[in-house]
Image (cartoon, rainbow over all chains, first blue to last red; front, side, top):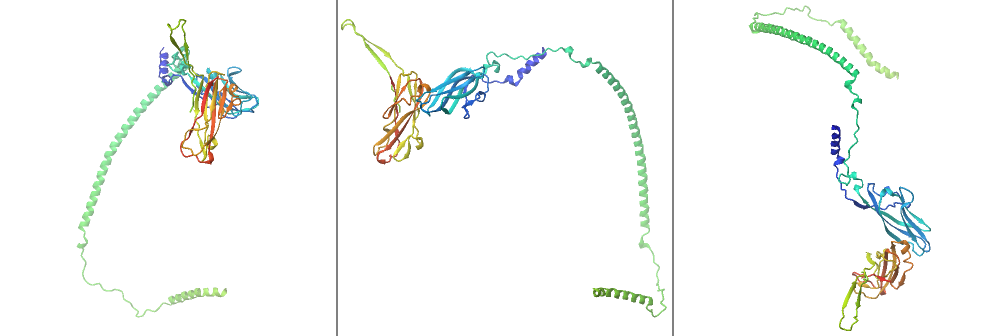
Length: 303
Length: 171
């Protein structure tokens, strides 16, 4: 019952059911059904594709092309879509004496014939001659409430109730009654218990470890503080000692012994001769230089 | 532009008493006849002016013929007389006489079998064409007209109007 009410509520609030449109019949007319020289046309391409459309009039015109003495018959017609024959057929006999180029303009009431009955249309000429400047127009009336379900305001409208299937709930699969699922569920629960215990133990161990690390860090932080303090004292003492040494041994307090300091080196020879080894070495260097200079001229001569 | 013949009849019956002079009266019997032939102007014509001395409804010269629609609801009861103009109903003062040419033809019919031969069976009487309306329905007649000023004199500038007369005549 609840499901039915839910369905009804859904239907009530669906956009298509809250849509409102005029249900007043309206009238219209088509364009020229003839679009080419074939003088044939398909009705679905001419009339609007709406329900409840009735054709009321066929209005056509054309000009006859014939010799004055000819007898020509022209049919403007529509096939009967639901059977054989024609639902509309208008005959024009152009007797001998009628002149070529004469136009016919005709409006033929057909009552209200549903568009579904109208098949393909055509203009057929029997006898010598032809037609040109043809124009075929249909006037129609559309009754929106042709289908009462078109609009809730239409007479005879019935609130649609969707078909709701009766479902045997016992035949439906119930996961809670599935033994396999129950077994799996128990297994999962057991596994979960084991996992919880392990997690508890891990948690205790981790807490102990964290506490131990905390104590160690505390102890180390105390020793580090002591060491830093001692080092600071040592540096301070050293600086003080260095300052004392500088302060106590200033250069301006040194004493130099007075008196004269005589030359102690004595040259025995009065003349210092040139060294022969140096002379030879000088000649050798000169000769080598001369050879190098001359070699460039020798090369030129060889060329 | 059109002249519609309205038919009406008044019948007066005089009742003469059997006794002389002493007892006598007159009683009217009135009646109205509604014509079964209706004439309407479908489109007014236009004169083109291809040269100084010519006015014409020929489309090639920028003119347009006048179209008259005749609706008949009773067959073999009427003639229609359509007369092309032979003078201007209004115009400036003209320097010379004007020569007129006009013709009426069946332009459109609503019944090929009954009206298709109207054109070939019409009777022409000068500028007037007479059609025997043998079928019910609508017939459209087109009248063309040409006016040429005598002596090749120019038409004076101004507005020119000519009338086509259509009459339904009961047989």
